[in-house]
Length: 124
Image (cartoon, rainbow, N blue to C red; front, side, top):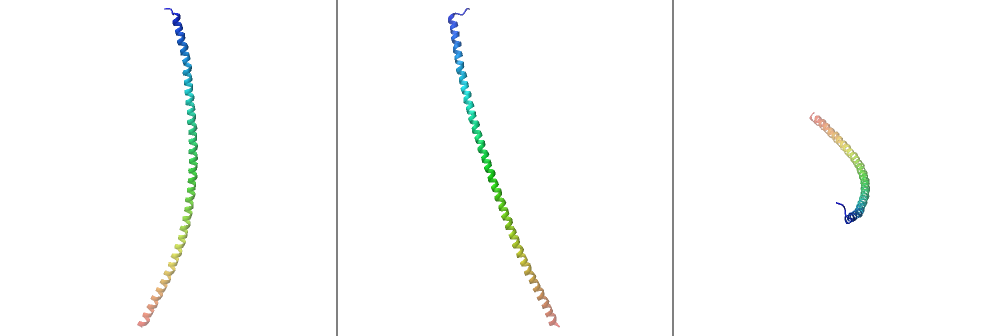
């Protein structure tokens, strides 16, 4: 079956049309790829920015923790000073109580001995 000129013209027309449609498809794909790349770049930049913000936040948290540690150390030093002061005061009180008890015991012993001597001399 030989091809007629009309069939040849029709085939040529279809080929031209198909070739003309292909660049548009390629252009659409290229545009789509460019859009995707642009979006990817934007997302990467935003992620980079978020990472920088997170690192800055972590630095600030570290500074705050250091401040809290310093405050706890200061509180510990203050508490140690107070406990030392209380220990000194308690030692002074106990020493005073021991002195009073010693005096009381000496007076009690003196009164007991003198009473015993008095009773022994009175009974004679």
